[in-house]
Image (cartoon, rainbow, N blue to C red; front, side, top):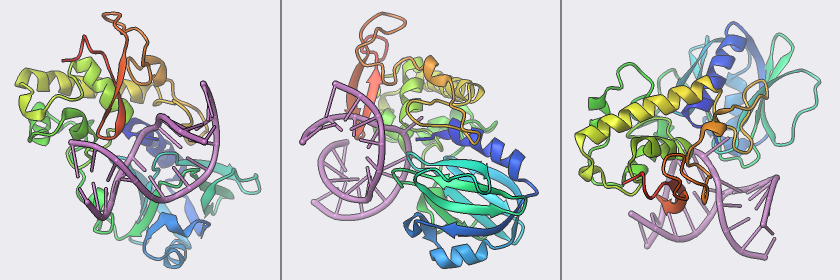
Length: 273
DNA sequence: ATAGGCCTGACG
DNA sequence: CGTCAGGCCTAT
Protein backbone atom coordinates (compact mmCIF):
# COMPACT_ATOMS: atom_id res chain seq x y z
CA UNK A 1 0.00 0.00 0.00
CA UNK A 2 2.52 2.54 0.98
CA UNK A 3 4.47 4.40 -1.64
CA UNK A 4 7.40 6.75 -1.12
CA UNK A 5 5.54 9.47 0.85
CA UNK A 6 3.90 7.00 3.26
CA UNK A 7 7.14 5.08 3.82
CA UNK A 8 9.00 8.36 4.38
CA UNK A 9 6.44 9.47 7.01
CA UNK A 10 6.93 6.18 8.83
CA UNK A 11 10.71 6.47 8.50
CA UNK A 12 10.73 9.89 10.15
CA UNK A 13 8.57 8.66 13.01
CA UNK A 14 10.66 5.52 13.49
CA UNK A 15 13.85 7.55 13.42
CA UNK A 16 12.52 9.88 16.13
CA UNK A 17 11.15 7.10 18.31
CA UNK A 18 13.77 4.40 17.90
CA UNK A 19 17.13 6.13 17.61
CA UNK A 20 19.04 5.14 20.74
CA UNK A 21 16.56 2.36 21.60
CA UNK A 22 17.57 -1.27 21.92
CA UNK A 23 15.98 -4.42 20.54
CA UNK A 24 16.24 -7.08 23.25
CA UNK A 25 14.81 -9.83 21.07
CA UNK A 26 12.67 -10.52 18.03
CA UNK A 27 9.91 -12.99 17.38
CA UNK A 28 9.08 -14.15 13.86
CA UNK A 29 5.50 -15.39 13.73
CA UNK A 30 5.35 -15.80 9.93
CA UNK A 31 8.71 -17.17 8.72
CA UNK A 32 7.78 -16.64 5.03
CA UNK A 33 8.31 -12.91 5.44
CA UNK A 34 12.01 -13.28 6.27
CA UNK A 35 13.92 -13.51 2.99
CA UNK A 36 17.42 -13.50 4.49
CA UNK A 37 18.98 -15.13 6.47
CA UNK A 38 16.93 -18.03 7.86
CA UNK A 39 14.17 -16.90 10.24
CA UNK A 40 15.95 -18.50 13.23
CA UNK A 41 19.25 -16.85 12.40
CA UNK A 42 17.39 -13.56 11.90
CA UNK A 43 15.84 -13.83 15.36
CA UNK A 44 19.14 -14.76 16.95
CA UNK A 45 21.11 -11.98 15.28
CA UNK A 46 18.53 -9.38 16.36
CA UNK A 47 18.90 -10.27 20.03
CA UNK A 48 20.32 -7.29 21.89
CA UNK A 49 20.87 -4.79 19.06
CA UNK A 50 21.02 -1.03 19.49
CA UNK A 51 19.27 1.16 16.93
CA UNK A 52 21.39 3.96 15.48
CA UNK A 53 18.87 5.44 13.07
CA UNK A 54 16.36 4.73 10.34
CA UNK A 55 16.87 5.36 6.63
CA UNK A 56 14.80 4.75 3.52
CA UNK A 57 15.45 3.77 -0.07
CA UNK A 58 12.38 3.79 -2.33
CA UNK A 59 9.76 1.81 -0.45
CA UNK A 60 12.32 0.03 1.75
CA UNK A 61 12.94 0.98 5.38
CA UNK A 62 16.58 0.48 6.42
CA UNK A 63 17.16 0.31 10.16
CA UNK A 64 20.76 0.91 11.11
CA UNK A 65 21.85 -1.33 14.01
CA UNK A 66 24.97 -0.91 16.11
CA UNK A 67 26.23 -4.49 15.71
CA UNK A 68 27.13 -3.92 12.09
CA UNK A 69 23.77 -5.04 10.72
CA UNK A 70 21.01 -3.45 8.70
CA UNK A 71 17.40 -4.47 9.30
CA UNK A 72 15.37 -4.10 6.11
CA UNK A 73 11.58 -3.92 6.03
CA UNK A 74 9.32 -3.60 2.99
CA UNK A 75 5.63 -3.09 3.77
CA UNK A 76 4.30 -4.66 0.59
CA UNK A 77 0.70 -3.76 -0.13
CA UNK A 78 -0.87 -3.77 3.35
CA UNK A 79 2.01 -3.75 5.83
CA UNK A 80 2.13 -1.35 8.76
CA UNK A 81 4.26 -0.81 11.83
CA UNK A 82 3.06 0.17 15.25
CA UNK A 83 4.77 0.93 18.51
CA UNK A 84 2.84 -0.31 21.53
CA UNK A 85 3.39 -0.78 25.25
CA UNK A 86 4.17 -4.37 26.13
CA UNK A 87 1.06 -6.19 27.25
CA UNK A 88 -1.27 -4.31 24.93
CA UNK A 89 -3.15 -6.81 22.84
CA UNK A 90 -1.67 -7.35 19.42
CA UNK A 91 -3.70 -6.63 16.32
CA UNK A 92 -4.75 -9.42 13.98
CA UNK A 93 -2.05 -10.24 11.40
CA UNK A 94 0.87 -9.32 13.62
CA UNK A 95 3.74 -11.26 12.04
CA UNK A 96 6.89 -9.79 13.60
CA UNK A 97 7.50 -8.51 17.12
CA UNK A 98 10.58 -6.52 18.06
CA UNK A 99 10.85 -6.27 21.85
CA UNK A 100 12.51 -3.05 22.98
CA UNK A 101 14.48 -2.57 26.18
CA UNK A 102 12.25 0.36 27.23
CA UNK A 103 9.16 -1.85 27.54
CA UNK A 104 7.62 -1.09 24.16
CA UNK A 105 7.13 -3.49 21.25
CA UNK A 106 7.47 -2.63 17.59
CA UNK A 107 4.89 -4.70 15.68
CA UNK A 108 4.85 -5.54 12.00
CA UNK A 109 1.24 -6.11 10.92
CA UNK A 110 0.32 -7.20 7.40
CA UNK A 111 -3.00 -8.84 6.38
CA UNK A 112 -1.98 -9.72 2.83
CA UNK A 113 1.59 -10.70 3.74
CA UNK A 114 3.15 -9.23 0.60
CA UNK A 115 5.84 -7.51 2.66
CA UNK A 116 9.32 -8.81 3.40
CA UNK A 117 12.13 -8.36 5.87
CA UNK A 118 15.84 -9.17 5.85
CA UNK A 119 18.93 -8.67 7.96
CA UNK A 120 22.15 -7.90 6.11
CA UNK A 121 25.56 -6.29 6.52
CA UNK A 122 25.05 -2.54 6.02
CA UNK A 123 24.68 -1.71 2.34
CA UNK A 124 24.86 -5.35 1.25
CA UNK A 125 21.68 -5.63 -0.76
CA UNK A 126 22.57 -8.63 -2.91
CA UNK A 127 19.76 -10.69 -1.41
CA UNK A 128 17.06 -8.15 -2.23
CA UNK A 129 17.04 -7.70 -5.94
CA UNK A 130 14.51 -4.89 -5.71
CA UNK A 131 16.93 -2.91 -3.56
CA UNK A 132 20.05 -3.91 -5.43
CA UNK A 133 18.77 -2.52 -8.73
CA UNK A 134 16.80 0.44 -7.37
CA UNK A 135 16.77 3.72 -9.28
CA UNK A 136 17.31 7.32 -8.11
CA UNK A 137 15.31 8.94 -5.30
CA UNK A 138 12.85 11.41 -6.83
CA UNK A 139 12.80 13.72 -3.80
CA UNK A 140 16.59 14.09 -3.61
CA UNK A 141 18.31 17.34 -4.57
CA UNK A 142 20.21 15.47 -7.28
CA UNK A 143 17.04 14.33 -9.04
CA UNK A 144 17.25 16.79 -11.90
CA UNK A 145 15.40 16.84 -15.21
CA UNK A 146 18.43 15.19 -16.79
CA UNK A 147 18.35 12.36 -14.28
CA UNK A 148 14.67 11.83 -15.04
CA UNK A 149 15.29 11.95 -18.79
CA UNK A 150 17.95 9.21 -18.46
CA UNK A 151 15.67 7.12 -16.26
CA UNK A 152 12.95 7.37 -18.87
CA UNK A 153 14.99 6.20 -21.85
CA UNK A 154 13.53 3.48 -24.03
CA UNK A 155 10.18 2.71 -25.56
CA UNK A 156 8.01 1.45 -22.68
CA UNK A 157 4.75 3.14 -21.83
CA UNK A 158 5.30 5.99 -19.45
CA UNK A 159 3.10 4.62 -16.69
CA UNK A 160 4.94 1.28 -16.69
CA UNK A 161 8.22 3.15 -16.56
CA UNK A 162 7.15 5.23 -13.56
CA UNK A 163 6.16 2.04 -11.72
CA UNK A 164 9.51 0.42 -12.54
CA UNK A 165 11.54 0.75 -9.32
CA UNK A 166 14.81 0.31 -11.22
CA UNK A 167 14.11 3.50 -13.18
CA UNK A 168 12.87 5.73 -10.34
CA UNK A 169 12.49 4.69 -6.69
CA UNK A 170 9.33 4.73 -4.64
CA UNK A 171 6.53 5.54 -7.09
CA UNK A 172 3.44 3.32 -7.02
CA UNK A 173 0.03 3.24 -8.60
CA UNK A 174 -1.53 6.26 -6.88
CA UNK A 175 1.30 8.70 -7.39
CA UNK A 176 2.05 7.58 -10.96
CA UNK A 177 -1.52 8.45 -11.96
CA UNK A 178 -1.52 11.74 -10.06
CA UNK A 179 1.81 12.82 -11.58
CA UNK A 180 0.76 11.98 -15.12
CA UNK A 181 -2.51 13.86 -14.72
CA UNK A 182 -0.78 17.00 -13.47
CA UNK A 183 1.74 16.76 -16.32
CA UNK A 184 -1.04 16.27 -18.91
CA UNK A 185 0.51 13.03 -20.15
CA UNK A 186 -1.58 9.98 -21.06
CA UNK A 187 -0.46 6.83 -19.18
CA UNK A 188 -0.09 4.90 -22.45
CA UNK A 189 2.30 7.33 -24.11
CA UNK A 190 5.56 5.73 -25.21
CA UNK A 191 8.71 7.12 -23.66
CA UNK A 192 10.40 7.76 -27.01
CA UNK A 193 7.46 9.91 -27.98
CA UNK A 194 7.69 12.23 -24.98
CA UNK A 195 9.29 15.61 -25.68
CA UNK A 196 11.87 17.41 -23.50
CA UNK A 197 9.32 20.04 -22.41
CA UNK A 198 7.01 17.23 -21.34
CA UNK A 199 9.82 15.65 -19.33
CA UNK A 200 10.22 19.00 -17.58
CA UNK A 201 6.52 19.12 -16.84
CA UNK A 202 6.57 15.58 -15.55
CA UNK A 203 9.61 16.32 -13.41
CA UNK A 204 7.88 19.30 -11.82
CA UNK A 205 4.69 17.28 -11.30
CA UNK A 206 6.60 14.46 -9.64
CA UNK A 207 8.25 16.77 -7.13
CA UNK A 208 5.01 18.62 -6.50
CA UNK A 209 2.90 15.51 -5.93
CA UNK A 210 5.46 13.80 -3.70
CA UNK A 211 6.12 16.91 -1.62
CA UNK A 212 2.44 17.73 -1.20
CA UNK A 213 1.69 14.13 -0.25
CA UNK A 214 4.51 14.27 2.31
CA UNK A 215 3.22 17.47 3.84
CA UNK A 216 -0.27 15.92 4.05
CA UNK A 217 0.97 12.81 5.83
CA UNK A 218 0.48 10.56 2.77
CA UNK A 219 -2.65 9.04 1.21
CA UNK A 220 -5.08 6.82 3.12
CA UNK A 221 -7.35 5.22 0.56
CA UNK A 222 -8.31 2.13 2.50
CA UNK A 223 -5.99 1.22 5.30
CA UNK A 224 -2.75 3.18 5.41
CA UNK A 225 -1.92 4.54 8.85
CA UNK A 226 1.35 5.89 10.19
CA UNK A 227 3.29 4.67 13.24
CA UNK A 228 0.79 6.38 15.55
CA UNK A 229 -2.18 4.86 13.74
CA UNK A 230 -3.03 8.19 12.06
CA UNK A 231 -4.26 8.25 8.44
CA UNK A 232 -2.92 10.73 5.90
CA UNK A 233 -5.05 13.36 4.17
CA UNK A 234 -3.61 13.58 0.67
CA UNK A 235 -6.43 11.35 -0.68
CA UNK A 236 -8.68 14.41 -0.57
CA UNK A 237 -6.33 16.02 -3.09
CA UNK A 238 -6.30 13.10 -5.53
CA UNK A 239 -7.48 14.40 -8.89
CA UNK A 240 -7.83 11.10 -10.77
CA UNK A 241 -6.95 8.10 -8.62
CA UNK A 242 -10.13 6.07 -7.93
CA UNK A 243 -12.28 8.88 -9.37
CA UNK A 244 -13.62 6.94 -12.36
CA UNK A 245 -16.77 8.59 -13.73
CA UNK A 246 -16.29 11.76 -11.71
CA UNK A 247 -15.72 15.08 -13.46
CA UNK A 248 -12.20 16.21 -14.27
CA UNK A 249 -11.53 19.26 -12.10
CA UNK A 250 -10.25 21.18 -15.13
CA UNK A 251 -12.48 20.21 -18.08
CA UNK A 252 -15.39 18.34 -16.46
CA UNK A 253 -14.94 15.27 -18.70
CA UNK A 254 -15.55 12.05 -16.76
CA UNK A 255 -12.35 10.46 -15.45
CA UNK A 256 -11.69 7.11 -17.08
CA UNK A 257 -10.08 3.91 -15.91
CA UNK A 258 -8.05 1.49 -18.00
CA UNK A 259 -5.55 -1.30 -17.38
CA UNK A 260 -1.92 -0.35 -17.92
CA UNK A 261 0.91 -2.60 -16.76
CA UNK A 262 -1.72 -4.78 -15.13
CA UNK A 263 -2.87 -1.98 -12.84
CA UNK A 264 -5.96 0.19 -12.81
CA UNK A 265 -4.98 3.54 -14.27
CA UNK A 266 -7.10 6.64 -13.94
CA UNK A 267 -6.80 9.56 -16.34
CA UNK A 268 -8.65 12.39 -18.03
CA UNK A 269 -9.12 11.60 -21.73
CA UNK A 270 -9.26 15.29 -22.57
CA UNK A 271 -6.46 16.76 -20.44
CA UNK A 272 -3.98 13.91 -20.87
CA UNK A 273 -2.54 13.30 -24.34
C1' DA B 1 4.11 -6.66 -22.77
C1' DT B 2 0.88 -9.46 -20.43
C1' DA B 3 -1.09 -12.86 -17.34
C1' DG B 4 -0.87 -15.21 -13.23
C1' DG B 5 0.57 -15.92 -8.64
C1' DC B 6 1.27 -14.67 -3.87
C1' DC B 7 -2.62 -13.43 0.37
C1' DT B 8 -6.70 -11.37 3.03
C1' DG B 9 -10.59 -8.39 3.24
C1' DA B 10 -14.11 -5.12 1.65
C1' DC B 11 -17.78 -4.36 -1.20
C1' DG B 12 -21.57 -5.14 -4.84
C1' DC C 1 -20.62 -15.43 -5.74
C1' DG C 2 -17.29 -12.04 -8.38
C1' DT C 3 -14.22 -7.97 -8.49
C1' DC C 4 -10.99 -5.12 -6.70
C1' DA C 5 -7.02 -3.55 -3.80
C1' DG C 6 -1.30 1.32 -2.34
C1' DG C 7 3.58 -4.41 -4.62
C1' DC C 8 6.44 -7.26 -6.93
C1' DC C 9 8.09 -11.73 -8.90
C1' DT C 10 7.87 -15.41 -12.36
C1' DA C 11 6.84 -17.49 -16.71
C1' DT C 12 5.19 -17.07 -21.34
